Length: 317
Image (tube, rainbow, N blue to C red; front, side):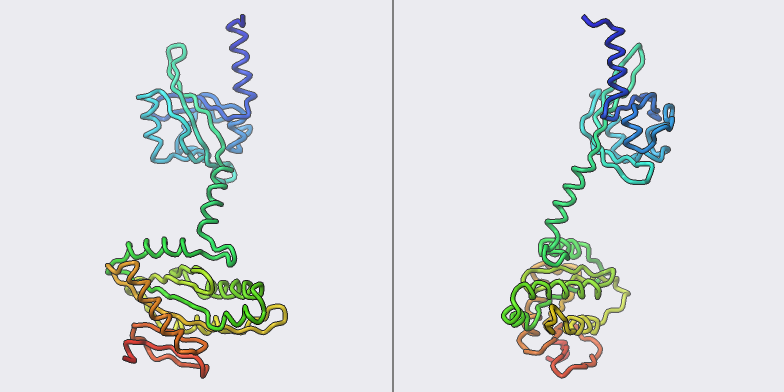
């Protein structure tokens, strides 16, 4: 039978040698460290630091005191434990470390202490983020995909007020089928990547750019009510799309049919999509290399190419 002294020594060795971070703290308001093991110090990049006697909360650079901490303390008071709570710690380098913490409140020699076991959750969080990113990003072009676009648009519409404006641009590439037929789908795919990059470069802080599928793209542009808006900006986008591209010594040009719809507070998701889609098909039917259609009345646009036009349906009706 193992004596108490031997067991105590074994437990002390387990605490010191364990690769799993442990901490023991007081249960007072400040929850001060009494003891941490080397694995704990390694995790936060503080080997050699003396942290005993210091509070667990926001006063330390390596602890992050979040709003849920009060709930965790309440669980210790009422249940005596909690398990696998997600808590962020800060490494000495400033890097945030996602952790899972399980804790128990124990009474030893007439005093109560909180014993915490921490698990570094960085790999799991990184994996989850990668999965989430993959669900949002178009694999071919690297920009946002249709699912992400629809999620963003719904949120943007829900957040509209009298102080904000939102514009939806539906973009369909003109003559793209000819590129695939003449040069093959590999060249066509690379062309889509070039066009996606041009859309991103054109965009500003308030623009959300996505590939909707095939040769169709969408842009959600958000503005404050006091911000200036110009239809000419989207005509410039159409011209940027139509700039020549060289791929494997092949000189390629596509154009753009753009339908631009404005949303005000209360406009539904489906109604806005239908409006932009209808305007885009009107632009497509013109047969021009580039054509921008909108129901907005905007300043006259200077057309620099014979085959390029931009129209406001309200102005031309």
